[in-house]
Image 1 (spheres, rainbow, N blue to C red):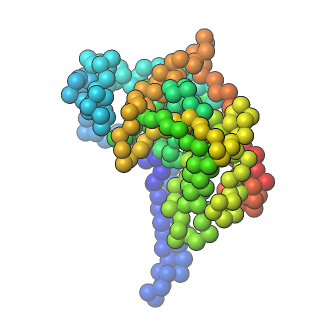
Image 2 (image 1 turned 120 degrees about the vertical axis):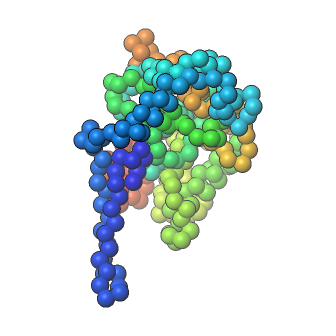
Image 3 (image 1 turned 90 degrees about the vertical axis):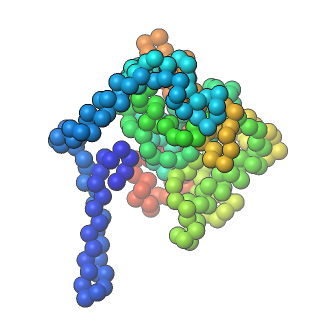
Length: 284
């Protein structure tokens, strides 16, 4: 259960006389240091990490990005252990609305394309990097590895942006559970907004502003960057290279990557929801 096999999910059913009387779900943490490694799997992983990257690798759906020339001849272990920067805070990929790793991804997209806004899918996989630890290329790959990691930039009007956010929110918060598609809210960079999950489609998203304080206007066009599109292959570079280069470019002289802000949306009407515990943004 969960990302990276950190838990074992256990569902117990109480069935009596052919009827379900109750159920209980538990998540049991997997403490890696307490369990002996599977020798065969350990040997396989060691062998794979010692393998050298070559020009037969396929990283992208695009032929011009099949392999990265700068990685040819290096072992996977060398590539993955590259130290990029020191985390200024715990970097995580969880939460219904935003995570600090999500902010790094969005910042990288904005940096790559000089975009007003960045969008990143609301997923929770990827390991956590602790404050003060080095961010390695392996950490970046745990956040970005997928078969459709090409990036893009496009123009969207303010009306299109709010309609997109409203559509995602409706998939998550429709009062009819059969119409909820699951997942989490799309992550945004460079954009602040307020959301009231209990309202209806078209009325949940308000107070949209850019990081510079400018109010999003319906008829104004904005430069929006993103990644992970399934039905087409974008023209931009692969996300892991975009993120790597952003971290190297933006780390300070002491090698620390400092995030100036996190675009946590403000939540309204959620005070009675126990899931709001420890939410780092504003809520009421």
